[in-house]
Image (tube, rainbow, N blue to C red; front, side, top):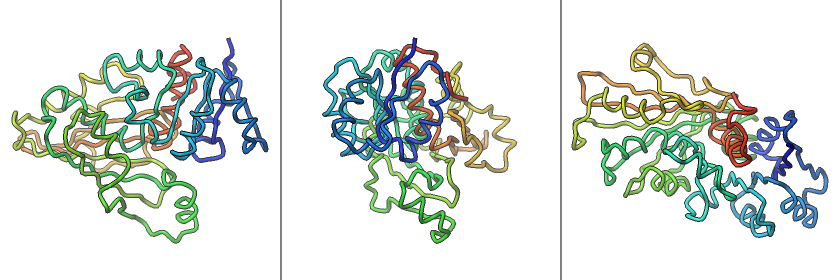
Length: 310
């Protein structure tokens, strides 16, 4: 069976990457508007005529597109932040919790997670669920991403060579990913998020430092690692590095999983000590954006979730 898919916003960074992952597949027919993509009537027809729609648009444009969909059978994946904390939408992180794949598969409205939140939720939610991190605990997350996640203006600035090697941003502490990070980890107080961008195109590291001795249960490094390993046992796209493998590393390349839909979680810490650094490695355009969108598309269409993904 062949399914029709319309990518609204295919000219943007995420849209182009989604298209690249889908265009060679024989089980899908891509609805392409070409020069008619700004034609409202043509867009409305495509939005209502496709089996599945992937929105790769700014928030307000995504809301406008959703409002144009009148066909209840159309399955929608939105890659913007517009619906990530909306209870009427299913959150599209398949590995987030038991039963999440089934929720995505049954949904007609799925919000694709953000790249930073994917790493943060992947690291923290299992620890909150296991009671290792109390829901009311103050949690900090530091992260660095390639510039491709910053939109056309940032991409142009970095590729012109005038942006410098590294830039901290989100200095107002009001980054739009904070509500998403807080809600989907089960935390009760807003996350302290410290994002940065580096002078490379794609790939990211998301880090959560923890003072183990300060936590109520004073967990060991092994206990923290074990909770993560148990949460993602058997997952195709999320893996937890063995403690020995992490201990052997002297550094992590943020570009190490580029081009894939994988995320690798590391637990760094002195096994006799009282501190730990949790680090997620992923491609901000892969598991952090277009790869996750394709994974969700596969689930929503009843296909194997890894088709077209590596």
